[in-house]
Length: 401
Image: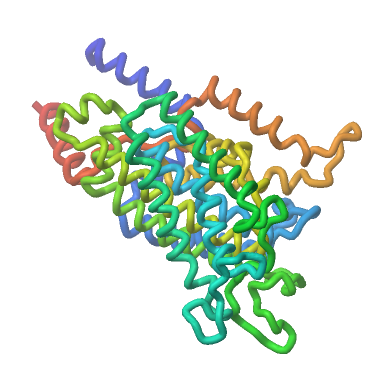
């Protein structure tokens, strides 16, 4: 055995001992075939869908409805996936993503709320009461995609801190507009009685299973919103996953790693950054539409800069660029404050200290694991499996020689 072989063996041994649980799980997942990933994915999401019906005792949230917590988690997870496209895939630092979330929510509220002068609901029209929310979802996504296009065209020539400041300003502009256009948005009083899916109407539940009147038992309205969010989440994951494996995804990775080098190699960096911005905005609008329907009330304070930072925190904690990682990060952001709600230590309600906990977590993470809990695995995106087999075969032939 040569000196180099000894060094490689020692390095491999140290690496295996230093692997974090997230690395072990990520490595195990990467070794699975596509069919195996589908099987485990279906089983995993199936078990996740059953958690509101059979919440484990150590997992439950005693201070608040567990179904409502999971509904909030699904909503934030969709936001995290959309923000991950912008920040994790394309490497664009967006501090005002909450603005797209607000545009989606206000689109639904302005078209369906009784307090809105733009209310277009009619008994036999396009926005009839039963299907108004569902009809507004594509409109909300289209409105936020257009907002992303309008914002992205003049600003995506900027990079780094400059882009972050511009997007931060965009988020604040949307909130201030909603607060000051009182003739349209009802100002700080907000818009009430926003439409929601009218499904499962019975004598016991005349307004359907998605209404706030369905508040009893485990299968309450929060659980139904969680199931709807889970279905939408799976669809978005499939869409984003296909984009990652396409030419668009490869362009995003090259821009994230080195924009100048990507441009020299012929990548139209502005166009692909605009693609990321528009797709991420549309996903944020979808989550905003879910929020408006679930809460049935939209007001400007919800869309403040703190919430935008929490969304970004979910992406950073989970691992930028990793779709499943940012979902885990969203779960931490939502579950931890709700789990600690009502828990007192030395006379302090721990649920009120969520910003302190998240700040400390980010500091510790940046010191010991800056890539996040589940960092994205760098691999060949096109014909990756075939290429790895050829490389392994070449290494084996060299070793035999």
